[in-house]
Image (cartoon, rainbow, N blue to C red):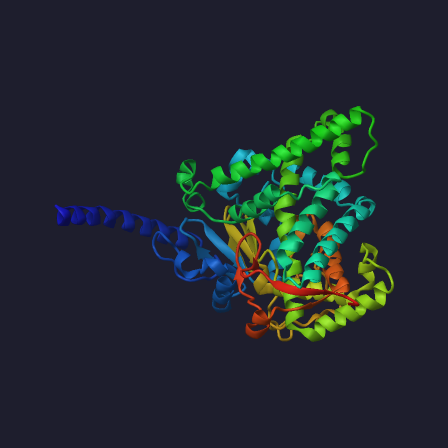
Length: 496
């Protein structure tokens, strides 16, 4: 029985595989002017050629062979185009036809994709959401007004670390930065602290689920089954986040009815705009706001805390850079007891440290995009519907652009005006063009303030076992590229 069954199964599989192979061949030949790339296998395409635990590095190695624009096939008969150089990235990110995003199936939970500024196509609702965020939420005047709230939270972080310093206990730098980033963001949005253990768990879990490819993404016909439960799990987290947002808005509305003064935070801005949106028939509404605020927490906290953690790790590995940045902070901060956001512009070496950290360790290593129409880039065809991956990590390590590209050298940014605000394509950790990170103005302040405060208030050393073996710089790839082994260091209060 068993041999007969095996033989029947093999005989049934052979025509299926051959049919799929023929379809794959026809598909590949249909687009002969696609960028070059490795030959795909039947059914799985080039999936086996990418080490997904470090996809940015694996794709960079393939690009060294096939060029700045490369085509790979990931199981579906839709090509994926890999972009690996600044020139190619500039052409792609400035092309309006390439500004959509492929939606991961998990993000469809609770209808979130319909209110996602990350995943919505660049049409009316998406434009309205970005315009509102840029002109109202992250405008300079708004962020300036809320600076004292963020300053208070940074001082709480310093106080927390001081307690560890008094006991000589190692500090989990990433965790301390994550808690502070979550509190900083909640203060900016709601003027209250929301950094509960439950919310921290929700943000961490959502950031992992949001970046984990599933069977549903590879085989859309199976999406309804949600075989890995990713949509169900993310849906529960989204509901929890929406519950918090609803409670905050309900409480603020009650306070307004009772005559409480406005707090001038982002929640106040939304409440003042709601009636205007209704009267104008704007695509902006409360559901869109909930989508935006949810993504601010998921996307904004991990990116900030990971950048701070990577920067501290590099400075501890390079004592000469640590000495320079601490001397600059001492000169600028002087006798003041705290660093303020207004000090950032006076600290060029601190800014160089952040730039160099983001160059070597972009927290988002791959940018995902989708072609809305067939277009031509670098003489190659990018078909409508194809996925485009911009490898920020590979772009930042181009040997013909950067001297010693794998070495931590903040000094490389002192003699030039290269920035990460999307105009210099050799450094685009926050993306560029229409899909550039919305929260960059706030992230810029948070990262510099948190890192500067850690450095000007404390001297840092490594525990003996880490000093002996060296810091583990292994990456953990996900929606954010974080340190696989959390950085632990011992803080000593400056002057003690």
